[in-house]
Image 1 (cartoon, rainbow, N blue to C red):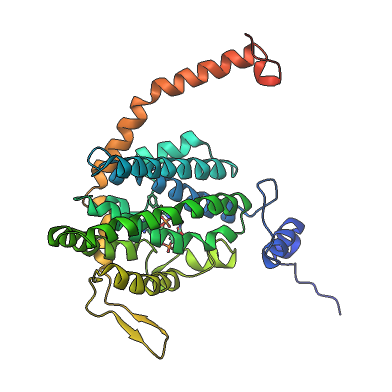
Image 2 (image 1 turned 180 degrees about the horizontal axis):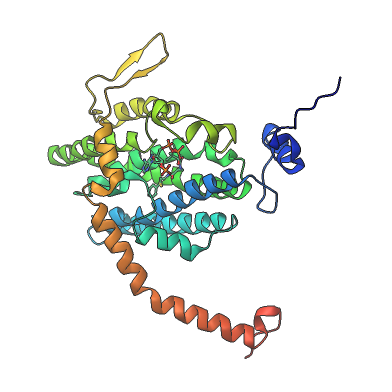
Length: 328
Ligand code: BYC
C-alpha cells in the first residue's frame, strides 16, 4: 500500500535522522556536526549561564582573600578563585564553538540580560562562609555537574571532566575549613553553624525549580544534555550531606528532614520558591552589587584587551602568527 501523506519534516531530513541516531546511541555531537537550532540555542543558554556563574562566583570568595586567617588559607583560597576563572574560560570557549562570540556573552552578562546561578547573589559574612561555600555550593555543583560530563555535546562534556576534578578538591577544602572550626572554640562552632544555616537552603535552590515547574528539563533530558531531573539531583545531594553533617557536628537547618524508608530517600521541608524567584528577578541581596563589580572589572580590563588585540595584529602583520618564527 502506498501513502499520499507527506513525510513529517523530521523524517525528511537526513541530517536530523543522523542527529537523532547520535543521541539515541549515546554518541557525542561535535561542533562541526549538524544539530537542530533548538538544541544549539538551549546549549548556548545553559553553557553561557554556567560560564557566567563561574565568573560571578569568584566575587563572594574573593571578598575573603585579604582576610583569610593564615597564609596557607589565603594561598588555598586564591588558588580556588583562580580555578573558578579557569572554569569560566573553558566554558566560554566551549560555548563559542556553537557560534556565539565571547563579546556577545559578556555583553549579555554585564547588561543584566543573562542569568547566572542564584547562589552567588548571597553575601559572605564570615570566614566560615568559605567553608560553607566549599562544602555546600561546590558539593551541589559536583552533584549537578558529574552527570554533565556525559552531556551529548562533546565540548561541554570534556570541559566538565576537568571542572569536576577541581570542584571535588574545592568541596573537600570547604569541608576541612568547617571541620577545623567545629573542633575549635564555642564561638568558632557557632560561626560554622551560622554559615551552614544561611547557605543550606540557597544551595538546594541551585538545582533549579521543582520538576513540575522546570520548562527546560524534558527537552534537555531527551537531548541527553541533562541526565537527571532537578529534584532527583537535589535529593541525591541531601542524601550525601546528611552523613557528612554528622561527621562535622553541624545541624542541617530543616526540622522536617526525615528518612523515608519507603522511598529510600530523605523527605525535605518546603523550599521557599518565592525567594528563589525574587533572586532570579534581580532582587536578591547582592544582585546589583555583583553586576556592578563585573561591569567595573570589564571596564578596568579594557586596556588589556586593547593591548592583546594590538599585539595579535602586529604578530599577524609580521607573519609570526602563521607559523613563522617570532622576530628576535
Ligand atoms: N539560578 O527549566 P529549568 C558553580 C533558571 S557554578 C539561576 O529547570 P534548566 C560554582 C533556568 O536557567 C554553578 N537561574 O532550567 C562556581 C531557566 O531559565 P531560562 C552553576 C536558574 O536549564 C564558582 C529557569 O530557571 N551551575 O558551581 O533545565 C564557585 C527554569 O529552570 C537556576 C550550572 O550552571 C538557578 N539556580 O536547569 C563555586 C550547571 N535554576 O534559561 C561553584 C549547569 C534554574 O529558561 N546548568 N534557573 O531563562 C544546569 O545544570 C541547569 O541549567 C540548571 C537549570 C539545573 C541550573
